View 1 (cartoon, one colour):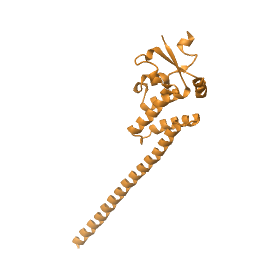
View 2 (spheres, one colour):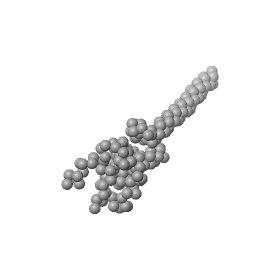
View 3 (tube, rainbow over the protein chains, first blue to last red):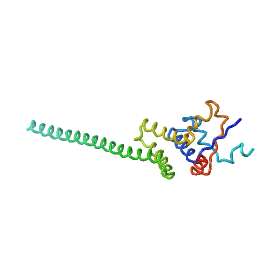
View 4 (cartoon, one colour):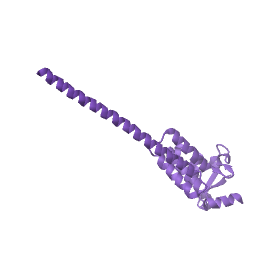
Length: 49
Length: 131
């Protein structure tokens, strides 16, 4: 069962800034990479069915 | 006569070498001083960026994030600075009023978690959090 966690725009921006500082998504915690690539609610695969 | 000429040449060369060494020494000191001044100014901006990132104002936070990224591109940034900036941004990305997002998914189960972006912005999120 998939759990959904919502994050704010600022959290996404912070995650992206962190990735930029550390040199790529492979250099950060997988959770940070996932936050950085979060899509807006209503546009995810699950929402589209 | 020829000895006087040799003395003259050596005196000239000595003065020239002395001047060159003095010039190099001064140039090196000036360069070190300039680097120290740049690093000091960089440190002031870094402190300002960190304060802005933790500000109550959303616009200041956004400016702080942008400044932090720009400062980390500088040659003056050390690994310690990078680590500090990363810690602040990591906290900003994962901490919510409810706590740390890392506590939400059990370790290793990240594939079972879908993260969606609340397009309402931070104010809406705060309202949702308060509700």
